Every structure is written in structure tokens, then in C-alpha cells.
Image (tube, rainbow, N blue to C red; front, top):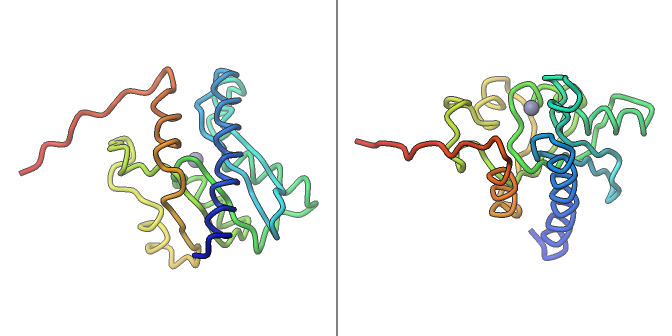
Length: 163
Ligand SMILES: [Zn+2]
């Protein structure tokens, strides 16, 4: 990865983190996504499950809906989706339906020791469904984890017992 690519990823994830703050201030879970194509942001979304009363209003779905509206098509081929949190299975499938080719992630379920997702990971779903989605992770992870942990409803999972 070149320095330019790395700087671009940090910059776009910074925009995602700003949207996380807006969601939090609104009373929603602080998770956000943006969709970028050819260096331009074409869609933005943040979680609206609480304020929208819609359990499917996850950040990634909101960003896909915004990008599809802005582009006048649901075909988002060639786009990259940035997300503060690893997409859940529903969002992962929406990403596939939108033909988005790449995702860039901050926080991961495993990294946050979340147990509500069992053994799920995007890589496992990609593997299971023979998807060509490319995953880039490790972008501003500490900040993405901190914003999620800062949510008023976050419950820190117990330390995993091994052995
Ligand atoms: Zn989701």
C-alpha cells in the first residue's frame, strides 16, 4: 500500500468517525459508513435503528441507499465501502447486492470480543458464499473501537476463558 493510499484511507475513515459522532448525538448507535468511488464520496450513512424505529437501518444499508439515490442506480460497481464496524451478515449481503467490490474496516467483532455474533466474520461469509468482495482492515482501529465502546448501551464482554 502506498503512502497516498494509506493517507486516503485515514482521511475517509475520519469522515466515518465524524458521522459516528452525529449518530451518537442523535441517540443512535455510533456506527457509520461512507461509499467512495473514483476518490469521491457518493454515499453516507449512519445507524438509525433507534431514532428511525427500523431494525434494518444499519449504517451500511443507509449508505447504500444514499449512494443509490445519488447515482440513480443500485449498481455501485467499482465502489469501496468504509465502515467503522465490521458489517453484520445483513449488511454484507446488501453490499454484495449493490456490487460493491471492496470494504475498508475499522473495528472488528472479534477484536472487540463481541459474543453476539458467535463465530461470524466477514471473511467466513465471503468464503461460504464464494464472494469476490475484498476486505481491507486495520484502518484507525483504536478510534473506531473507542467510539463504539463510548456508546451508552455498550456492555463490555467478559474476558474469554481459555483452556
Ligand atoms: Zn448491519
